[in-house]
Length: 174
Image (cartoon, rainbow, N blue to C red; front, top):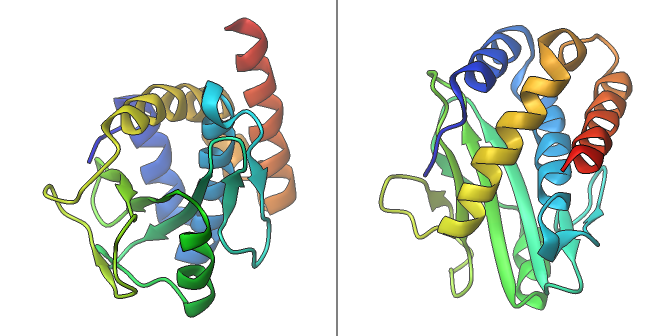
């Protein structure tokens, strides 16, 4: 479990107060996808927008990711299609945020060997510590670069486009 920068947390807290859980989830997923693409192992990451299982994956790294945003519970229930898709990847993972109270905890949970049952997230959840560190740094930078106003715009596609634009500018500056 990890936490983002104070500024990134403040932006996400303001966003979570404005958006319902599903809309917050769409925007969080776009942020995570772009932060993962900034990782050298996941440069080929494919975003399964919409109802894809898993939510995104890297064939080169043999990793599949489910990305979830929950407000009321730290228990994550994946649907049957997700549980069927994840074992096709050597490294199945769950990136999840709990938005009930800031600062928001985020997990990059390891799902390999996990039985298809609800996943309880806590400080004892088995995580990918290196991936969490990457996400802590890059999600914070990306959220700060995009900013609240652009993430909160009424049209989801505009918000996601701004996430992608800011991600490209971070890539060029690195």
